[in-house]
Image (tube, rainbow, N blue to C red; front, side, top):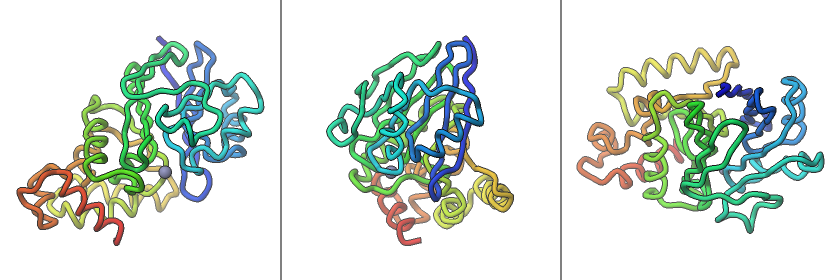
Length: 256
Ligand SMILES: [Zn+2]
């Protein structure tokens, strides 16, 4: 089985687009389509031809480029079944546990509500890749627009249970703010402190902090770590359930 190649590119104000390419099978997916022009430019730079668009959720900065790209024809648009009524142009509707072929690889769909009710992530186990949209960010998580803290806790736990080496691609570059906040609710975490300095250097050099990995997020993401006694204690929630701790951490981040 051929390895998959990825191409990450910044677009709009702080979004990331990603192309995923299977050279042997000749297929290329755009994970979401934040901006038609930016996706087209990425395709030109790589020389890859678009065959799939995999949508994580309905927000305009993830689907705004779909209609324009689809005009070319021969493009299969995959997206969440539960959001089919508010996402135009879906060809294939998917939900929890569904799998579909992308070139020589199987893609598994994970439902990850919290940021939006219909949010999904795409996991390609054979390539060690997962595309998590606005559910998990490097050292952070999406705002709870349509879901509860319990929804987000379950979704993050699902992502954190993937193999530790899995590379996670998220939808935005929010890492510096996330890391600066994370040290306030996980103050004794040496790995987190080290990662904050690393992220400051990367961003000072205008380099991306995406992808991250499951192992790194388990070690440094305060939302993924909301079940740990140390994080609960740091926000005055010792002994409380993880989703309650997550609610407090999220509220503090919203005000950070
Ligand atoms: Zn969003």
